[in-house]
Amino acid sequence: MLLGGKIEIELEEMLTPEEADYIRESSINCIDVPNMQVNLERKFSGRSFHFKLLHRMRTRVLDNEYGTDGMQLKPLFEKGQIICQDGRVFEIIPSDDFRIESIRCQTRLVRECATIF
Image 1 (cartoon, helix red, strand yellow):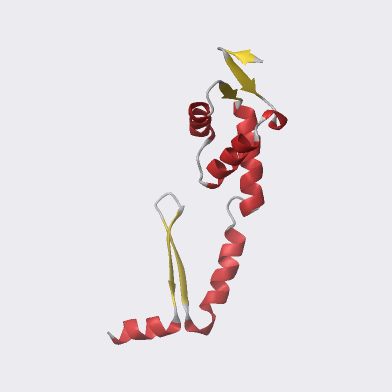
Image 2 (image 1 turned 120 degrees about the horizontal axis):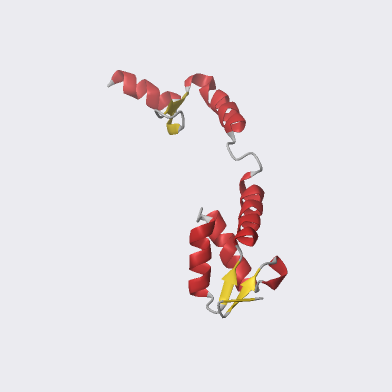
């Protein structure tokens, strides 16, 4: 389908291998779909990429890379419990809007040195 003189890419099968790789790499680098769309149309002139196609591919790439649970809080807290064994420190510092602002990890040896000095 032509859209404004450009070929509109709606299906994954219509992508070249280079375009598909670019979408995968952009997804891993956390580029959002609107910016990805602009970048693709600059890089691959004469082609327009459908928003829903990019969204589906980005979601699949991120799910494959990080899992379908976007928060991953349960594994984080499980690993934190393991870290806390043996006198190590694992603290999650929340932000004002209850997001994770930072995580503090400290080995037992570093903790002992910190209390000495």
